[in-house]
Image: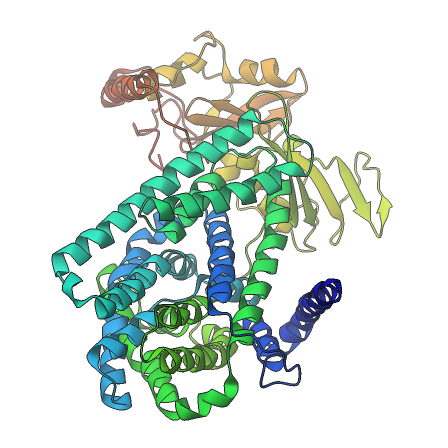
Length: 626
């Protein structure tokens, strides 16, 4: 018995290490890494050189479900709210109506090409209808191309949220075949809505609970990531037991936790990345081991024909119907159609007929496996050249090489950000360093460099800075940008400029700004209060919904002050639930701002650049331009 345990552990560890090493080969050759993991599983399986016989379908389904729960949580965790704001509608349409349309078209093709009955054909359509979150997310991250935001966001939302629809369809069709008397379409639809409602609400509440719990717990270092993973598995199980979609529940929980203020985020994120890789390797190796390639020959030709119809007819048609109302271009729709990779979820769903004793279970499993292989091979291998050919790539996003969260007392949010300085950036080109952009540590060729007055930062230097999240766009342009700062760049210089003698009260009254500063104090004195007698160009002050920037400075005093009407908001975590007091305060502030703006012509004028004492246009703080 002990020998058997050691042999199993040795084989498992060897496969894990081998899979990790082959990722290097995958990156060099451009092979989809998940296809590599699946291929290793086939090679060590019953028909491969490894000769390992594994036919435990329930265990494979268990491993797959557990792995997919963690992968989907990570997918939600890594998806910012801006992605949902950008493409929630098209992504959800593809995740629901797109899956239904794809399942129907593939099922119809299977009936006529394979000669199966309608229940079996539609079941095969449901099995391969959804795109795979693990495949799509990993492919987009490792493809080396940077896509337009809306295209990337649509693919991420669709792949993260369409699995519950396909799973429900497949399980529902298996149930209908086994018990024909439960064929009432109304009951089927009600069950579908219940699964989504319970899954979505359960995931939301669970995510808020995880955030609150992690704030409250004082755990030893290293335990917090383990607790989060344990809570993810608990959420998945609990939502399933309540009759909801556990997969949807963990995805929504990941969205909430990932966009909230999570204690120890950096440590949890690093651990979660490793666990997600482990889950992907274990998932695809297990599914590869379960397959018997010698049985593929019986269904190879019709399955490849179905794969071709899926890739070239069903998926493009479903995407075209789903995205047409949202103004996507032909090239964007073509790319979204092609990146609809099939993966682990389809093979997992193909296990369900094996568990239920379906008459065509082995046929469905083998056909689905071939379709997944074809999708990963043809679609996965061509994503990078297709994106470039369709001209959907953009230059890599400017930003920090590394970000490390700092835990500080109170609600202060601070990070250490590391930049490899772009040789063509404004900082490397000789631009003076603003106070907020001075590195705490500068490394050059592996040595620490002390910056003295007059010294310049060079391209290739590694700069480490303390920064708040809202300062990152400014730092990106200074250290990672490749163009000089435009004199009219509103983030740096404001929407327009005011004289340093302009009283704070004039701004407060004109824009409905709340401030405790006496109304008669000039803006120049306000900067002096914050920075002492040595105000420098680029110094910034947040004034409620406005931001003031010292543009021109003489003898340590701000002569010209830039006014930014709509500054990037401070990074706000997801609130648990706003109190009535907060809601009332919000409406009161808006109500106060409105009459002040409407009566702008009667208010004391504010000097504007080039216009003497004329007032700037009366705009709301939400307007991007004056």
